[in-house]
Image 1 (tube, helix red, strand yellow):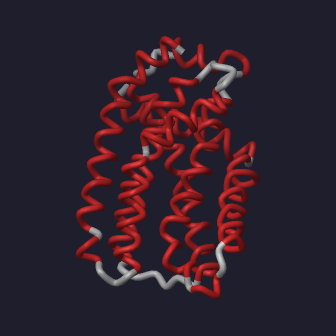
Image 2 (cartoon, rainbow, N blue to C red):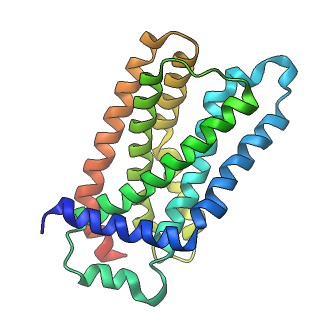
Length: 224
């Protein structure tokens, strides 16, 4: 069985669990929307700050929600020895990583669509340069999902997983947050040429995080 086919099996398993439990729809998506609404109330809209701060607030809300998604992805395997089942399944560690990261990325993509609508409605933002926005979102989503998956398995099985994952993930994704925010700012500001260096940075972060995950996830799974 190829790695990609094994990855599809793992991703389908995680997404099937989420579809049945509806945690993503009932908790993660509402959490992200609530964060956006709180930001809107916390910042005085009369000063015209919301449109300028929208890119950073969007990615901050997505990052906080992504941590919930990562914790959820590994929490479902705590019960009934499901993680032991993964170890004994014979699946390649790289395939398990790719599958879990893909499932998290799919959840984040759904969340981005919802948050994007929220930013347009609440922050009075007009979307421009759709290609830059799309490529930025794809690269940043891959980087966030892959990084979260790696650190999720590092913290898996620990009682302090819920608090340890944010402490590990937040510093690691700083370049991703910076690049995504700057790229969005340039695109929405009508200067897409200034966004491309940041998009390239995000692409490099995405590739690096995937490579690290493919190489490290298997050994980390055995130790977790």
